[in-house]
Length: 416
Image 1 (cartoon, rainbow, N blue to C red):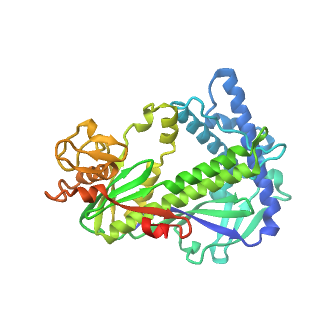
Image 2: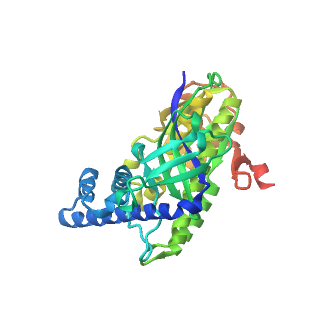
Image 3: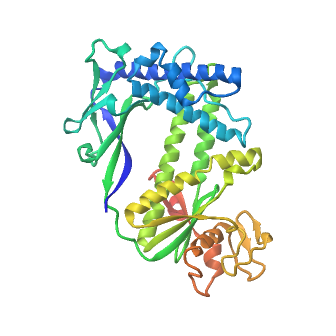
């Protein structure tokens, strides 16, 4: 039975020179709407101590002249993004009182080119001729029939005439030029089950994922991700000015986001591919119930809120569904303290972050591997029978992210 999934396809604009001025005007208007709504929210906050909700902000902004610079649905989307940003801030403040609220979109006296989203009545798509017509707001139209006609090109393996439905189109400034993002509903045929075997995953911050396969334990460290965060965060804050983030700061922020997205997609692709190759049809993923509601201190909270366990799970789930791997969310409670061989749960067995030594059965192993094996045993008890070799748990294989190839390779391959 076919399933519907959402995919985003990027199209380069072939007639960029002809449409860039119009797209610049829309991007500038989106920033203006954001800034006025942000200023309004600030005034209300100072007055009553609350941020106006999305409905109230939309109602107020409709009386502002800039609202009609964009198609009505495009203007509404800007307010929805601002409301989402405030909600994220509220969530962060629970554990990090110093978290910054959403800022203004400005650089000195200028505004950056914001993304403009066109919903169903804001665009008309012609996939046969690779064209899309984008609506302007009434303020920017020279006549009632004025619009922006973009000619685009996608990757050779993408044919937008075959998708079930284009939900919306986004005009995105990538730092050098405008490009189009087509958010589509696509029907895909899932594969039959990849096999009868079971694997478990322990998700972490240092080792992003540790997988207990039927015959091997594999570590996927996040070294490259940590290096990227350090470098691009330094670039971002080093160029922060009195008038808000500079062009270089925004570039660093976007670059880090792109690299993180690529890393997580590559990681989950590698894990699901390994499952298929090993005949694994069920994958148990550790899920830290109520983890973000706990207070882990200033440093711990910042690390925790950057931990993308929910994102990794979502990627694994939809990739697994298409390749016949059922991905299950399992509570990880006590899996880091419990011995995967005998079940002893003495807290002191977790000697340090990376080492697990069981005082009851003398199992010595990598702590993350022990946790991953416990996740696996939630689905299939005692999968290895009575043979629980220390060597297998203590010396797992390690796959590092190789920037040159953009893939995960064994430690030996990545170093060479």
